[in-house]
Structure formats: C-alpha cells, structure tokens
Amino acid sequence: PIPIIVDCDPGIDDTIALLTAFVSPELDIRGITPVCGNQPLERTVRNALQVCELGNRTDVPVYAGCFRPMLREPIYGQFHGKSGLGNTMLPEPKKTAETLSAVDFLIEALSNAAETGEKITLCCLGPMTNLAVALRMNPQIAEGVERIVMMGGAYREAGNRTMTSEFNVLADPHAAHVVFSSGIPIVALALDATHQVMLKPEHVAEFARVSGRISETLAELMAFWDRNDVRRYGSRGGPLHDPLVMAYILAPHLFETQKARVFVEYESELCMGQTIADWYGKSGLEPNADIVTKVDAEGVIAFFLARLSRYAEE
Ligand code: BDR
Ligand code: CA
Image (cartoon, rainbow, N blue to C red):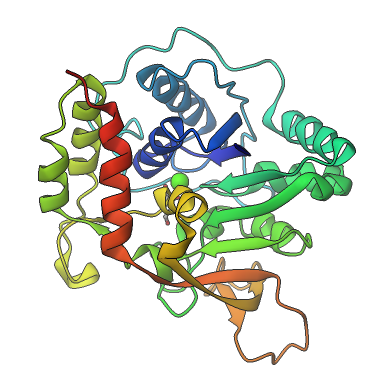
C-alpha cells in the first residue's frame, strides 16, 4: 500500500476524504495531522478523533498541529456548521491525540522515510501550516516525500473566500509559499478542479439508500454540504474539494493535469492568498506543480459512491 499522511482541518469535506481513505486498502495511513483551519485547532483535533471513532479506525494516530497560521491572523471556514461537522452528532472519541505534535511527527516520519529510502505521500486538505513549519525546522524532510497532493488555490477560476483566493491558501498564504518553494513535487487540486465535481442532491439521495450507521451519518454530512447556490455553481450541490485528493491518488485516470510554476501572493491586501500559475513560462522558472485542469466528474462521483458504499451494513 501507499504510505500517506493526511494533513487536514475537518471539516465536512475533509471528513468525506478521511472516510474514503479508511476503506481504501491501497492506502497505509501513517497519521492524521489536524491544523487550525475550518475551525480552531481544538475543534479540528476533536473532529478528527471523532471521525476515526465513527469509521472504526482508532488505530490511526492523530497528532495535533499548529494553533495558528505562520504570520496572519486565523480565519475560519464558513460552510461546515458550528462544530465544523454540520449538525451531525458524531460519537465521543475514546482516545486522545498523541503527545507528539504534528510538526514533530512530520519531521520524524519523513526523516525516517528519507533514511530508509521509503517515500511518503502527503495529502494536504487544509492550510499547510504544519508542513511549512516542519520544512522550516528541517528542510531535509523533503527527501522523505513522494509527492504532495493538495487541495487549495484557484487559478483560472475565481476565489471562494475572496475575489481572488481560495480558503486553504488564504488561511495561510505564507505556509503555501514555503511549500510551493520546497522543491517537492506537487499535484494541485484547486477550485479549477473541485468546482467541476458537484455532489448533487440526486447523488446524496442515491447514497442515502446505503444502509448502516456510518452511511447514514455520511449521507447527513453530504446533505448539509449542499450550497444551494445555483448562480455560483451552475447547479445545486456542494463541490467535493478535499475528497478529490483521495480520488486522484486512487483513480488518477479520471484527471488531466498541466505543469506550471506556481506563485503565491502573500503581500497584497487585494489579492492576498491568490495562486498564480505561469502557464506560458513567463517567469523563466521550472514548473513546480501539476495543476489539475480537467476531471471526469461522473467517473469521480461514481468512484466515491462505490467506495463509501463499503460502509453498508446488513
Ligand atoms: C477548502 O476550504 C475548506 O473549507 C474545505 O475543507 C476545503 O479544504 C475549499 O476551499
Ligand atoms: Ca479542508
């Protein structure tokens, strides 16, 4: 199996991504590293523990990450409800987070990987503060990374939090800058990709027919995710941002990418957090990312409904 670490800020779509990973034997989840993002850290850690409890994966260690972004003041998500998980009540977690912090865990796991020649895939589903701090503390950990598959940014697509900027990058633009400058291969699933995959009411209705406690909870979360904003998205439903990271790793044939050098704006007031792709080589710099440009939306939705149906109970 592919060794992965899931860096995240659960979050409804983070939760769908985690639950997908839990039932994918192709993946060996070495740890979950929640960060301050959609909610303050205490909440994202608790939510991650609750999702492990729900998915019967308390074997996966959770390491609490950074309390705050590198430089800017924190901002929080807007579409995840008060707890970060809609109105859904999740089981009380029986275990707690590890004593090791996310940054120390990333350094330890990736240095070990670098030493043994193993390479770990990093799934980044939130602001990338944890990874950026780890890279600042020990740049050599880059050698233990196979690649980063990240959800964040907006290239040809407009922003979702400001006119120019997507939430994960805007929430810690300095961290995103550090990561894009690290030399680690990056696959970028930005709004350009995720807005192509709307989880619509008819998909939720189809999934709601899957029996069992976990499936019911999932269907409830999916229903809450509907933005009800046809003007913005062209249809009802919610964009499947974070889960696309798992789909990309597990079913790459459903995606098309284009290489480009990516820059992150972290100084401008107007364009703070904007991601800019050098599509035509104007900068004279080598590409640092594979940006997903096209997604087989129907294929991806079918993939998720099939995967998550593994939670069906008699
Ligand atoms: C990203 O922002 C968060 O609210 C979601 O979890 C996702 O990671 C989308 O812009
Ligand atoms: Ca997220």
